[in-house]
Amino acid sequence: MSAIYLDCNATTPIDPAVSQSLMHYLTEEYGNEGSRTHEFGVRAKQAVQKARDQVAAVVAATRDEVIFTSGATESNNLAILGLRASAKELGKTHIITSAIEHKAVLEPCRLLEREGFEITRLPVDSRGFVDPDALRIELRADTFLVSIMQVNNETGIRQPLDEVADVLTDHPAYFHTDAAQGFGKDFEPLRNSRIDLISISGHKIYAPQGIGALIMRKRTHDRPPIQPLIHGGGQERGLRPGTLPVALIAALGMAAEIAMRDQKKRQQACHRVRRQAIDALSSLNPKLTGDQSLVMDHVLNLAFPGLDSEALIVALKDLIAISNGSACTSSSYSPSHVLKAMGMSDDEANSCIRISWCHLTPVIDWEAIAHRIKKIH
Image 1 (cartoon, rainbow, N blue to C red):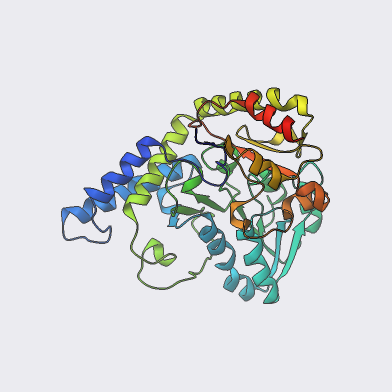
Image 2: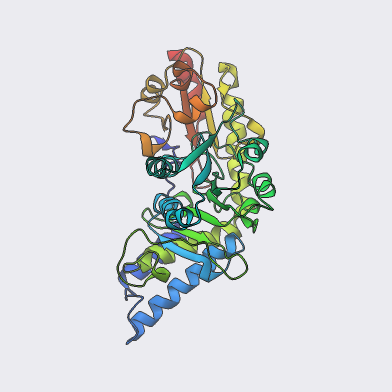
């Protein structure tokens, strides 16, 4: 029997309806969106515009505020590094982010730091979320950008986006959020109009890998003053040149539409799995990571006393496929920077595993998992 996939925070399976849309535009309506001289190009353009509407609807934006990218990593880089020239021109080179951001935010910030920008990394405590009061203290007249993620990819903990937005109400700094883990799952926070920039990835919401978007909200009539990182044709308002991958974009749009339609049903399914997991594993006295009242229903980050995560993953590999951190840092064997920021020692951080599932996950034999863990305890 093959293992059940429980690493949905790394990437999700493709929804069957999304897969159908993808294949349709790969094999039947495969025109270039930029071709205006024939019907194939016209249909491709219509598919892209429909997808813009579908993605925008999730966050109460408009189609002209959606820029398609290869995923949240590119979107994060475009949002952060794309503001560099404007920040320098205005002499506002202070950026605030958090210590638990994905590397796709931390590394662009580190690059700007080497160029003379000042980066403030807000701490978190053992609960795992940013304190808006800490942001209020660090906010300065020369702060140009605040970048706080929506949901942490390792712990599943929601960050207080509404409270951050309130702190920024009377401040001109741009507010960016890496919403890779929350877009299409945790809806209301991203509809806050004070959030200027939203990064998303299709492969976190049952669309294919290799497609995402940066949502750029206008202030009055002006977009954030982002400059492109690559140069070519005029696609995506000149911010992301290159032939648009129509099939991937249509698939992302379909995934966004289904996420809105099925949000309650999906949440209920994930909550049910979470309850089953906790009930079955509770006799092993697991230590759950962070404030559980803020954790998304499809994630468990936990440790079992005396068990190393690598040993646990190997022991369970024929039952479930799980991870001990971000897939994007799996080449590094150093303890998780997220868990370290939450005050864990190296040993404590190296004991944690992440289990993440979705509404497409088959029935899981949690009792068998618990029995296996008891045997190696």
